[in-house]
Image (cartoon, rainbow, N blue to C red; front, side, top):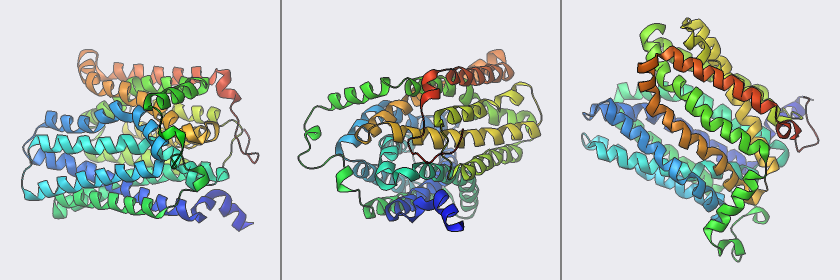
Length: 420
């Protein structure tokens, strides 16, 4: 009984290829979470101001906006594992170069921008291939658990990474932390090298005619699959504007308000930790779950994203903000687990990277605008108004998506499932 309980919730870790990939992936996530703090410290330490730091962060996002859709087609054409290997090798080289530059002195701002662009390029190719590779290394009845474990790794490293990175920066300096990030990508490269994609499920084999046709035809095929599924393009549009209106204020103005009235950096850091704890708790509860209507459950989870904007709009105390942040983390874990699993179950494997890319890149392309406009809008209308609009849109958009019949009609592909 106990063995069956464990197999149902974590049986995917018994699969050698998934276990190897997951170990490398979690290691690279930890390195990235550590290096975010280190890069900010190194940029400011080189003499750049906050504007310069914004350029560096933007340089990591822009290539994802520009390349994500094409990257999905490339992954489907040439093989997900191969594309992810190259992407991680690129990120490893970029971070190793940055570490060397930081060790050598005070790098110019353009060095940070260029290397951040290369890291963002690797991210653009890695991200859509991840969903597709999971189908190749995890059993179909364990896809939900695989996605829950991804979420757990992301949440845990977002808590541990900044803490560990900050400690290492204090003891050794930012260059060591960036070098550790480069090493974490090397671990991921090694893990990807060791896994074996089943030949029958490989996308880009010798002699496969898909390799010889034009790339734009691959893109068109992915687009046709994407727009044929109402639940998919509806949730994609929701999240494009969700990131712009609801999420960007929380990420950009939240720290500002934390400094202004919530109690400073320590309190804000604790709130972010509580948000991560919510994601971990929900991720653990998601293991082994097979809801009959996974997109409905995923959409219910999206209500959590809007909750932190409510106490911020009302200028509520840190306790209420932390409670909302916990719900936000929990909702994000529920959404990512069941939405990602549904995508893997419903979309043909040979099209999965393309469709995944098309579902992700609008959130980057539209959402990034929020980081540019929320500051001026908050100065003109006040932060409370911006948070209020974000809360209203987030809650109403999730409610609207739930009314769609296509969302309610999608069912779990595995016959073994949990209600509802």
